[in-house]
Image (cartoon, rainbow, N blue to C red; front, side, top):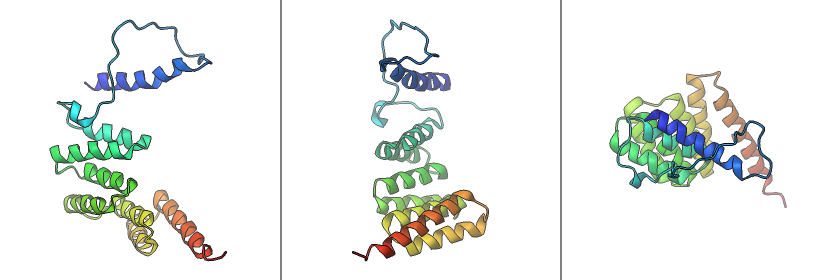
Length: 175
């Protein structure tokens, strides 16, 4: 099943290359005469998944910026595997990106019940608060994460982003 998934992803990636005016030097002249099936399906269309396929599909959609679709896949993943803390964190992050902070908070609470307040959860919650404009609470979450991992570059980058946001907000009063 994994080989089919990888083949499907490659088909999508390479399929877009044939429609451009300039062909890539590595593109082969291949003629496909079989039928074409959709490789990305909506969660309701698929009846069977391997143990982690939902999570991987959700992650793929999240990385593409399709946060609503990612949330659908993560939601289905946590319904089928309610003890999967990573899926709960992904669901929370997806909800953050579509502005459903109420649902993100619920998903973070589920993840915390399963794994405790991990570095990832603290960092993500900090980012969530930053998206909401609650810069004070964002800083609290980032600082708590840094106490657990003081050398974490992602958290430091988020703090820099937060600092930039704070300076922008302070200047916004000037007309």
